[in-house]
Length: 113
Length: 115
Image (cartoon, rainbow over all chains, first blue to last red):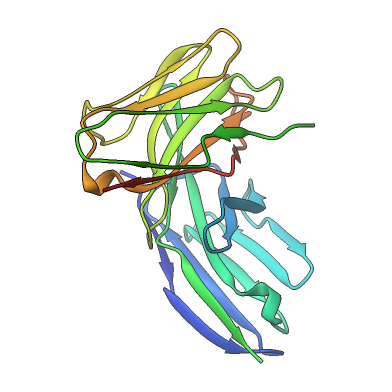
């Protein structure tokens, strides 16, 4: 059974600093998603990573995927307050005809001025 | 282009009542999935439907049911509501089919409060 673990669960960082959120998954998965969620809101898709070694960047966020290590990272560069949110990773689980996402517990990011 | 639309956005029910949540997928998307997100947790898979057929079901009791209509919209029904059913219910649509055309797009969600 596919399981997804994120760490840290909570991250308080100062503006201008760099940090990385880690996402480990337990069994083979063909794609890895990163989502952002603001309080009381839905999920905003950030990245979809499809293959080993995939790297995607958008603004101050960069995501990568290592399928051999079953590890994805979300790197934050020079954080700004607007990045404060909860970040989720999710891995695809295929079972027969079913496609479902297994989510991590989320990382609550608080960027302090 | 309209995204995934869900209704209602917020609703309050009492224990024992029944609720129906609705979802319209992105035009051209044939697969709809439902997720439950309890406060402070990640979303959990409830159902997936493709071409009106159930393709998967998560670890939820039989009080939860769903269906998909010929226009690919979907309803999620929850009977005999419990306090623990209070959550944000998310609908996601995708193209569906084989070969993994399954990048999910989520709707804004329906926030259910059970008193």
